Length: 182
Ligand SMILES: [Ca+2]
Ligand SMILES: [Ca+2]
Picture 1 (cartoon, rainbow, N blue to C red):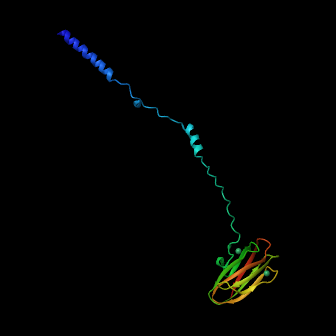
Picture 2 (picture 1 turned 60 degrees about the vertical axis):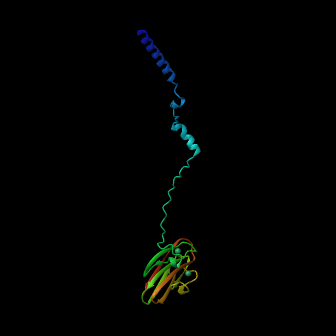
Picture 3 (picture 1 turned 180 degrees about the vertical axis):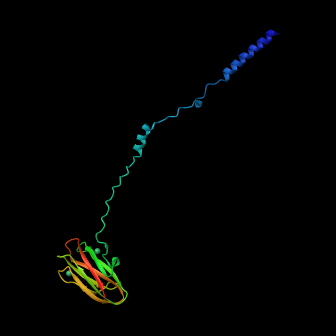
C-alpha cells in the first residue's frame, strides 16, 4: 500500500512536470516590446529644414522720418484742397512751375477785399480771385514778368477762392500773401 501511494505521487509529479513543460510556450514575438526608434533633434532638424525651408523674415528697414513740408498749406493744388484764410499775412512756397496754391476765405457782409502777393524776385507769379464755384475769375492781376501782384474787389456775402499761379518759378522759394478787408 505504501509503495502504491509513493508510485502514485511520483507519477503525478512527473505528469505535472511534463505538463508544465508542455504548457510553457516561448514568448510570442509580438509580446516582445520593440524599442521605439528615437531621433535626436540634431538628426531630424536638418531633414525638416531641408524639406520645409524657412524663408528668413526680412528685417524691416526703418523708413526715414518724412520731412514736414515747409508749406503749411500743401497740398492745395485745386479749389477742393484750398486752405482757409482770412484777413492776415500768409507765407507759403511754390514748389515748381506746375504747382498751384489755392486759398479760400468767407465774407459775411459786403466788403472790399485787397490781396497783395509778394513773390520771389526773378520769378513770375500771377494772382486770381474766384467765386464759388471757381469759374471765371472775378478779379485778377497778371503783370507779365513780375512776381508781385495785387488786386482789389468789392465782394458780397459768400465764399471766395484765391489762386497763386506761377508762370515761371526758379525753385522752391517763399512768397507772401496779404489779405485785407474794409
Ligand atoms: Ca500747391
Ligand atoms: Ca506776374
